Length: 99
Image 1: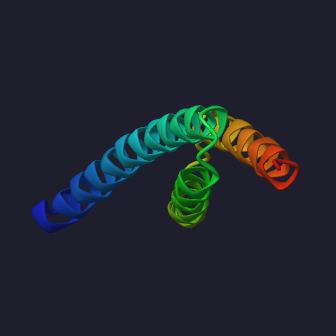
Image 2: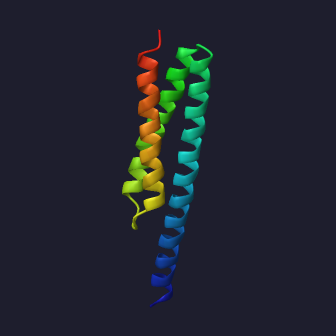
């Protein structure tokens, strides 16, 4: 391969590495936001809970988009995303039944 082709391969690998790191970080951030939303709900602060849930929902959309653009399956991240979505939906249902 030429130097140019090697550089392209190296940049693609770096892009994939950056994508994995971004997705891991974003998922963890969303889980933290969910924890905060649960805390706010326990304190009776449904407005803040809704705001945190909105952030989590937006995070899920971003994660899904970037996960779909990955060149290789990112099973670990996909599994965490499924847990995140389930937890967010559970809290959303809790919020709906909140007085």
